[in-house]
Figure 1 (cartoon, rainbow, N blue to C red):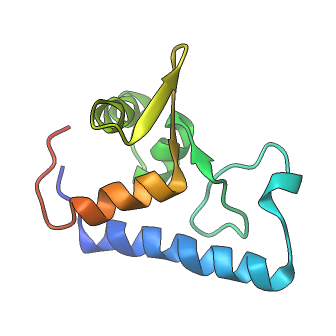
Figure 2: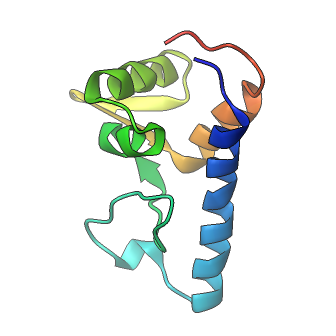
Length: 104
């Protein structure tokens, strides 16, 4: 998988959304059952496989492979059968591998 400029820009949009949330004084922690959407006003701090499906617009199996890769590279954690990655670690992965070919 190649990290494209479009993907990187999508993740830069997260910072813009977070800034907007700060200006409105909305706390993400106060909101339950929030789903990730690049066009949404609310972004969670921890992503699961379903969030990765939405971010990359891919099927569940590919999103699971991405999460397993992040886990094997110590960017994500596994609790039971579920994988989770913090938004900061997800963004760090993209900055660390920007312009590189990542095999999924």
